[in-house]
Amino acid sequence: MPGTYLYLMYIVRADLAIKVVSKNIELGLAALHGQKGPAYDRIVLNAGIVDHLLGCDGAEDVTIALDRAREAIDSGKALKKLLNYIKVSHKLK
Image (cartoon, rainbow, N blue to C red; front, side, top):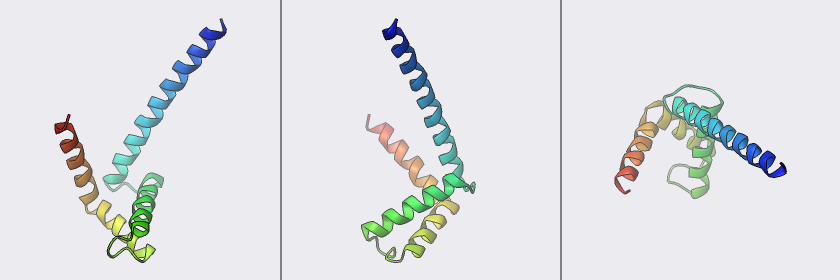
């Protein structure tokens, strides 16, 4: 019986993980479509800070890097790049 319990716990956790991933995809895509909220803010923060830390041209100032990330999302450029990446990666399979 203990093995059965552990197996059922694994199934429940796996199902929960799938739901969490699905929800994060939904929130991320909504943010990339310009929907403001916590997911949008996280994407802006991550993109801006990464650009700044990598020393990307024009991202020396964190506030400018964050503004550039917002502009990329709000203009649709970020979503377009993501969709192109998905398209290209599927061709490589």
